[in-house]
Length: 299
Image (cartoon, rainbow, N blue to C red):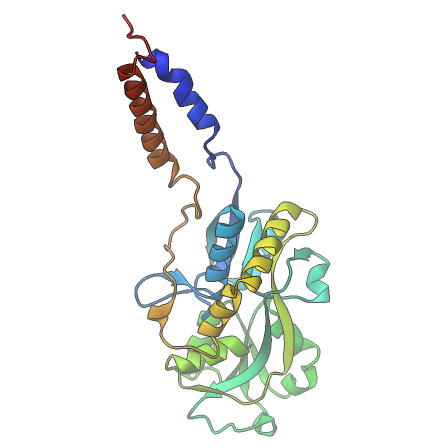
């Protein structure tokens, strides 16, 4: 009997979209860089980049998983060396980076700011002389520190750190007098209770985008840009960004996203349930047709 309906089952599978053999893209991402990617109070891994990637992958049907980092510079190195496929991690678009990475279309403009604790005596840029200022290694902020803002920072002591998490920890512990950081990060952190404030308005503003290794993954760039255009048109991009900037409320409002290295989107998760449904449907057709006399009984 089973052999009699096997062609029907096989035909059903041929028409079912199978994701198991599709490429699963490995995205480099920091473990904790609020508000771009972080684990909220409920243990949910979320943030601007995380939500944007989830929306885009759902629309353009690609699978991904995360490689988590606590070292920003190492994350960039691994992409250059082919250990990951892409990075979506508040990456500023610069001419220097364009020499080694291909960029997607930009999804946000972010600026850099000099920030201190609320109880600091430092009130303006003129107060900075012999102060200890922290910045994260490999970031555009570090580049600005050594180039465009070199004269200012030469009057002070610079401390190069591995991650934003460590940057803010040392500021709060009093080991740093100030930090050179991103405007969105500063705004979100202050709205969520960190006792920090900006000394300056945005010193520099640059577009933010996804990156892949140069001339390596045009297919992913095409899918990402297509999805980005669609969430710009349907208003979802503005909704995500506003949640972490002008309309910041609570981390509990973040869209849930499982904190693990498992594949996102439809792959794998739907295949087994799909098989069960198709088998049940196929057997149902078989017995209905047999009852109607359309399939002769087998020996």
